[in-house]
Image (cartoon, rainbow, N blue to C red):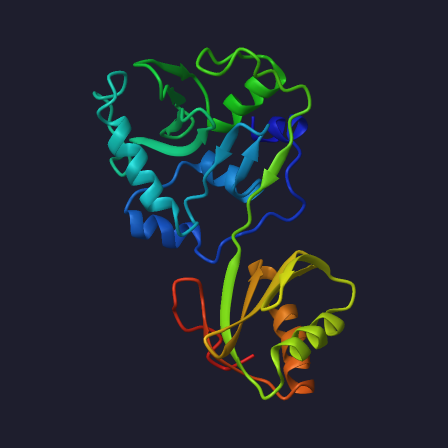
Length: 264
């Protein structure tokens, strides 16, 4: 049934594959991930179906706390309190949620899908793998009674959610902020302005956002970038810093963890 889903829902050409492998994940979980869930994530990645159903990839760093939260609330739900949940063998495995807060669980190896209502003590069971369930509701072969009555996507789209890395740094330079900002804008070339004040500016080019601001006697820069683009972005910054005699320090991620230890 997996291939049938791709006929009604086109997958990304090259979905993001997290660094964590399924083998590593299953060793950590000490239980297998349903093979159809693995196929979904390998084929589509994390993202949204028909602007309503959000697939969650277990290999992403935020999945485990999300799953623990969903399991803790669903385990006491009137419709599912007698069920076993991940990581119990063949326990219900969370793989998606809807905009209405309904939870989607896979049962074992293609043994079924359980949709749990967020608004009332109801559930719906589908006798097939997650990909079969998605194919059936997108093609109109099955109507999920817990979904909105107007959920009838004729041409469903999948929009992949790629994680952004936020890189923060302090720029050590003798160049005044105003001259530095003007020079950086020229260096980027055709970049879209996302806003500017006398002491800050934000530019976007090729999907990467560059923010520069002056405050507290320092000039800081934030770069918001997809992981796949980091190498190219670092090359862009390296060329600019070399041309303007800038030294970047305190390079860290959004949580304040030091990164790019070898420098820009």
